[in-house]
Image (cartoon, rainbow over all chains, first blue to last red; front, side, top):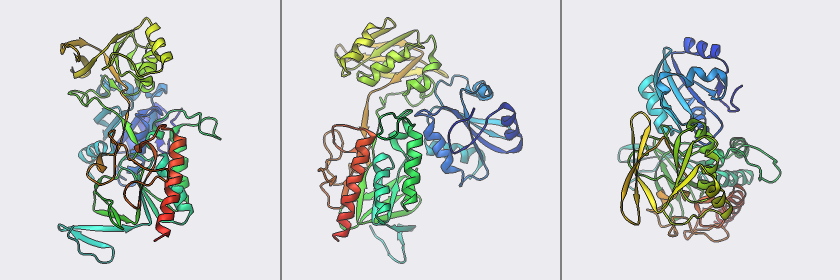
Length: 115
Length: 325
């Protein structure tokens, strides 16, 4: 179960763990194909070229494997899709709920992962 | 502007500007802008589409599209991706997420300066900047977006299972979404600024007949507050001035759309009292060489199909304009 986007996906919990293990900087957007989620996927797609040191992925919120994001302590209190989580060396360094602009996303990427 | 021209580069206030010349600039990459890009590209007219956000505009935000002729069912994301690919296949440049610093619409050469030091120039420009959802713009709205405040019932409704929520608005979207949200919420209060609804009668009747829905009329929200999630709203009765605080789990806001024309308010392009661009049936504005298309212009119906029609007309007339020299 994956999202029909042009991004690389996270399909399973095992894959999620592998990605966090193998990449220093990771951004995962966990959502559906709704009006709050699609703009975030689109921004990620555009930023992939510029931020080659970041692994960009999406994940289907309704997949049973998405509990790895849904149940993160950093996502407690989130009540708007998508849940977007940023990881450095496997640790959560930032998380946002609902739609975010390119400006908001790049501010986090630059702050946490550098330009 | 003090500028020293030469080989596509000029300098403004010690900032190096890169100059890019086209036949037509299209501002906005929604259905109208991309259709214009397809027609311009296919006519071998050099064109660039610039959008300050996601390519696809409001179309990309539509989950299911079932009334686009010839396509029984698709998503906004798929239709938008196909249009973007089609425009690029005809040679039209497409740039998303560009921040526009200034616009020059008068004279024979139009220019758009974007952050990062690029100035786009063309003899004609099509303004297809679209529309956006209105926000309440009250304290706490930004802070609690995604933490109790939502603008999409389909996306976020299931976070409010057995919760007490408010729906703000009085149009079709507000009333229909309020009814839809009763699938999840234990109680839905519709809060509206007038003493009557603008929605169609059938939508009003459906909301009034729903035992989970009640109403607060002639009131507007003045503040959102809470801790890690939204907990309370303050609202003011517009008739009596009385302010009330109410404990709440969530607020859904559906108060309509407005034209994305803020950047045009300092230009000479004519806007109506709603901030929409005024144009004739050739999509010509009051400024020669400046055309418009889609939801940002004053018109009766705002659909993908009408945006596509506008984009076609604007592109063909822009081609006529530049060919006339």
